Image (cartoon, rainbow, N blue to C red; front, side, top):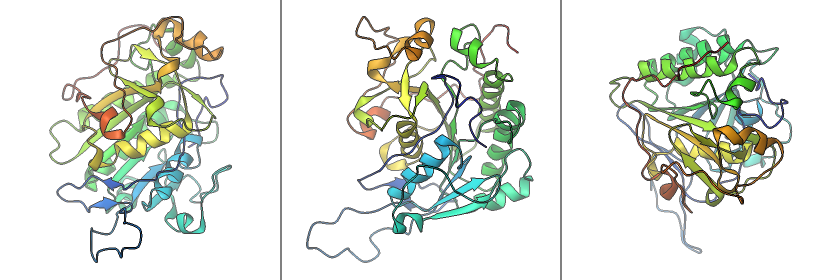
Length: 334
């Protein structure tokens, strides 16, 4: 599904894509295949035979959406085979460039999260090293309740049935704060924020005490179409009390990198992501995002910020969610 609020100012929703240059490895767990992208080789040397197992694919739902398409692009550029699931079964995003070798790593598949059966979803996910849920409501794809909530639940159940080690969910900043200005504004689009947090909480419940299987919930700030700025420009936070702006390309990088076990992103975790220089508290971030503001005039500090120049560094210290505990905040909501 395509993002529902993709044209609603610089709102909080989902999407991306960006190149990767170093070696990648999607986490290996019991009951799943090891996944890696490529191995760095010294100039002039020959690759060692059978240096590591053949990579297994990442499955991306919502691959024709802006964020999902960039997730596919980032994974393919990292050398990871990727299944691009769309409602139609064809993958034809705009402004996504891949070489012929990279394009050969992409397999298009039908995967309508609002309509596919449990058996169909589980079949698509068989053998996958990770799944990224980047689908969201749209006029042609379904309502927030059908896609962002029920569709996510259906995919989560299919991931568990297929023993997919990690499910990465693209959600939204401020989604657990129904009294925040951003939540109130975005929720006018068919109750999308309520559907997203209810979907998140259903995933937390489904993954309670699931040995060898886990999830990561990524909550982007206001999404832009800018070029990626890379890990060094990004700040992560936990607690959903701080946000900012971030390009869809950088969100895609976070989604794929958080699916990769080699860089240490803890499982069953939820975190917000935004460019560090755009960070604001939730009371001020909506207006700041719409006006392209920065935090040069002062930065709200939560005490839970994470920065780093590598993915290992920025993911280090993230805390797992309290097992099975919902995060939906108290307050009126559509």
